[in-house]
Image 1: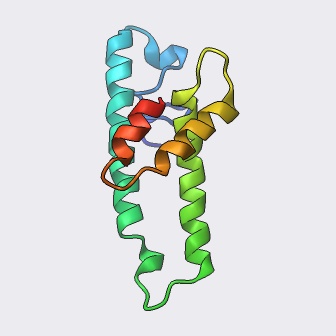
Image 2 (image 1 turned 30 degrees about the vertical axis):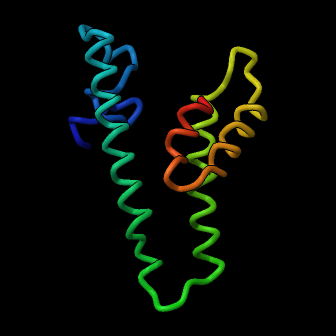
Length: 116
């Protein structure tokens, strides 16, 4: 067993917020560790999307489309969580995000920020 992982959650101890791992730590330290991990995971995901091993082929198939769709949907779920308004209306949040994604490539980032 890796001593850097929490025995209860299997999460990196620096980021784990279970009672045993949080003891003696500040909320700031735990948030910083989790933010660091989240940004590292986003970098990993972005790199894998750009250079997915299954896409290193001569001809793309509908299976490749399904892979990309699954990643998009999982990321959409996360974005919806950030975009929820005080009413908690997930459908409204999804609609705002989908409408923002309709913006041209050069403006999609700004549109997504406005949708939040």
